[in-house]
Length: 353
View 1 (cartoon, rainbow, N blue to C red):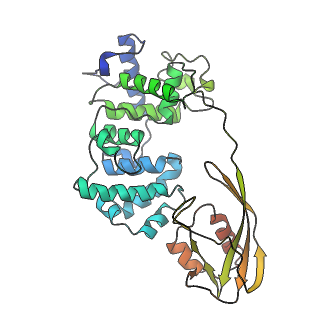
View 2 (cartoon, rainbow, N blue to C red):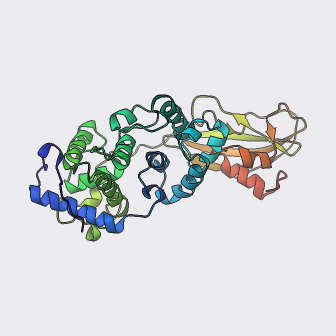
View 3 (cartoon, rainbow, N blue to C red):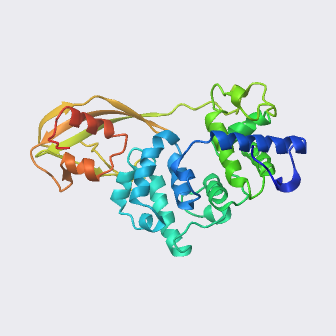
């Protein structure tokens, strides 16, 4: 049982709950977390750098899927200085598989800024952290509260779901008015700097393990006696999802002398600045082989792609690489990765792994 020696409620409000009930609720949540929290590498200490990297990686990615990438990344870039000095191509390669490459670019930008402004360390307050590239209010709150014990909120999708059910909120959670309402409730619940690190992590963990989107495990919830939701599965309320537009693309994978042509995409639009395959048909084609079609779903659009391997009789520029070079050095976005894998599986180009 967690003993709360000096628990405080920010602003003195309990948002409708009896104060003693509210204190007991926090005690139950922290006791549950103490027993049920997952053993994760970034929880072994309160290193702000590692917490930062884990939070950025966990965006759009399940924790379990993210962990191998996290381990490799920390081994390659163990601190702010090494990340600030990272080679861009190597950084992209380390990020390959996680998608949303703007995240790793912003990591480097923030690392450089930390070297220049904060003596190679992450700033210790939510107010300063949120000024760094790629760090929003949630990530800033998570770093500040978990690493530095600042008594601030860290409101992610898990916390929104927990509080919308706890208070039986039926307003659309994507509306700014509802977001402010939930933020106010969360801020009123903060227990003080002594407990804030575990409290914020406990809320996130509760949402990830118990108060899950579908079929919540209410019988195992430490807050089941306080929860006001009559139909938890119906909450939080969100607007109907809009259909994604679908773009049809023809991909041409140029091959010359057992080398594949890579094209660096423009510095704008989807996958900007990354390497991919051509969308223009070359001249002097010797033969072509059709690959299996593939559709890749982005957050707001779907690419429906047909692809051909086209063998040409001359290398028109220097951007042709062996498969070994591509696999070892270049980050191929997941939108194009199935085509590369099929080339390897069908042995359409020489490869010595």
